[in-house]
Length: 91
Image (tube, rainbow, N blue to C red; front, side, top):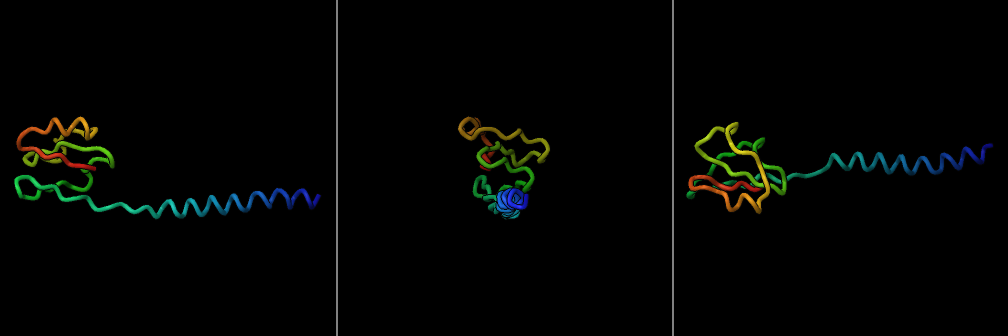
């Protein structure tokens, strides 16, 4: 009976250690600072919570408040839909 118990624990502890190590390292993700956005040589202020997710873009109108900006979308679509006076913000 003791041999069966040792066999069970031998498989459980390495898996638990791997799970704990993975959980600890998952909290160590590093995110880069947002790249400044410029329009006509002037910096455009985009609040950190309004940058698009990584891999997406957002058309940003400098004269509109943050809550009135259009939603993020695919960069390959939005890059052709930036009207005059707006900028494309990459996530």
